[in-house]
Image (tube, rainbow, N blue to C red; front, top):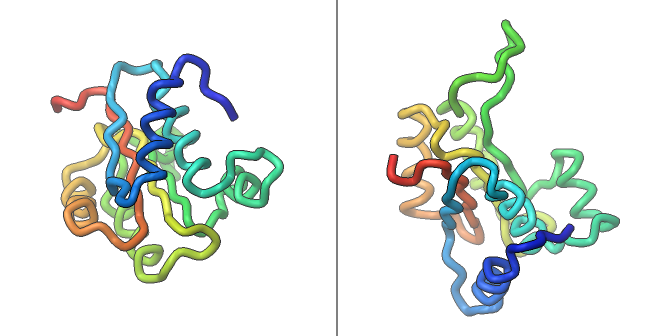
Length: 149
């Protein structure tokens, strides 16, 4: 997977990965449609050594079964089939099981939240503790269309 036009951001991220202490949370901010989610996916694959589409890690990410990767996003409503308005507190609480164990395949685990703007208040509060006291080897990639909100 390549990202054209994001060479500076990719170089910055690779340099952070190569450093001694990579920050545990990254805010990917900008207007809708500029490629924040694509960058988050790219960065997650880099961190999880799943850049090669033929790799086991890439296959597990595509299948939604990589043990060191989670994506929180608005889900379809079971009753209506419409996409929910928010990322719920229950979705955030499901991360606890992942945090209760160490990493499985990779050295780090990745949580993408697309978009942090879509979190209900309770979900944001539940996530805050993990952001303030991050679980070991966990990196959060937070997509935001309105970071000032």
